[in-house]
Length: 114
Picture 1 (tube, rainbow, N blue to C red):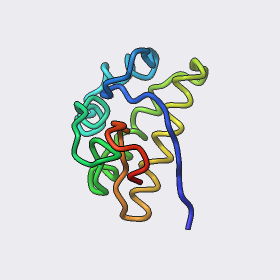
Picture 2 (picture 1 turned 90 degrees about the vertical axis):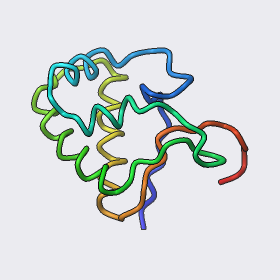
Picture 3 (picture 1 turned 180 degrees about the vertical axis):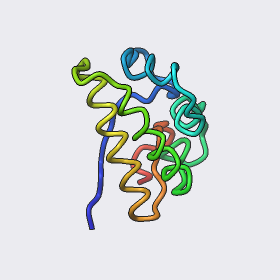
């Protein structure tokens, strides 16, 4: 079993302040509804230690759309954009492969509730 553990700013999270300008601008120019909705979904307090989950079916669809978007992204991107794209791919792939959901946001309501 491989566990993918990645923490980074997600555009829909409450604490998100920076942007991934190259990634987000490329996404805005495309018609990728599942990926767009998933990335900009507003954070909620659905679970004690995590906000919104991406279900496996959402992850499968978003991964397919991410592959389309990858063809539009420039080869050279800012480090943060490249990290976001790479980590998002890893998380969606892990969900699609294992059938497990992905926590999109840590809301910090109950530390240690993992």
